[in-house]
Image (cartoon, rainbow, N blue to C red; front, side):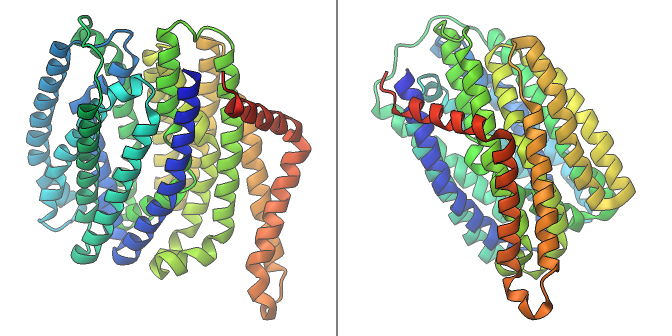
Length: 485
């Protein structure tokens, strides 16, 4: 199993190395062709798609991965029947609510079709997750990585093509539909060409729901907190401001892309070890903490690099219309340091069988987002919302760390994450001071000087405080990769 874990992690690394430039290209082209209002509509669409996925899936896809028993054919057919019922419910609900959304956001009538189609997109995403459960149970992540690379390629091709021809937010819906359809077809082809294991004879839909429903309730609560942008910011500043924040979210997500597959990978690995009785020792804890340290270090460096270059990159690659969103993106990029620990905590608690605890944490997080993010939007507008979301990451990580330690004994080093954020802020401040100290006639060297100062401050601060620990983590990571046992 160890070889499968290493190969799977390596495949995900290659997958992300390829997908990052593709996603950056797709987002850059779309941002040049579309308007901030189109990205505002996208924020609404993403909420509707996530809600549809939650209603249709009911957490059964993750439950099939975590279940200690191989599901029977009858159980799989039952899951599909409930998915169909969920799709019909979403179609009816979106058909009724779409006209009211158009009036509330003052959008053209044709967007009615976009809102209704979100129910189908969520169902396609759920079906793709359902089809991949067996590959995840068997830790066949190299195959999944290839499938995901194909999905991302299809998505960006369709996104760019439809954005060029239609010049509206429909390109996002069409791109997502193409992505999930392509992934489902590829998984079915792989499944049909390989020998399947014997069908299980145990398990019930009730058992799947008992595990999956709290996980899906968590997703719905996360969906509610994500709706603070389109609902609160939309009511305060309009759809254009929603689009500015949504675009800033896309920029913020660029350093996150290499790490996004890691939590589901971790979930499937720990679930497999739990099923085989290997997940009770302390090795899981060390590897999780090592991953948090190295992952947080990497994502903080990438985010800092983006912050230091946004002034030059945004007008060049995205267009002048997005320059006013640079301060928003810079603040949100600072939240990336807490991104990986947050996702790993979710995966770890779910794999260890604590979905209800994760549900409670999601409720707390939603309340904090509403208070800090929503309150910031009402008081200071879009910048207030961004500052509120930054504070949310700090507060929620502290709470999650304490709860995780109490439930599992895993001690999350949240102070390490906070120090990374402090180092990044200090680096940005000193880099800007260095840039502003350069006379106007030498302005062409301000960018390289700012980059040099910012990155050097970050490196020196990390070496002085965590240099020995990081060196040990890197050595252990190399030993794990080279090990043949």
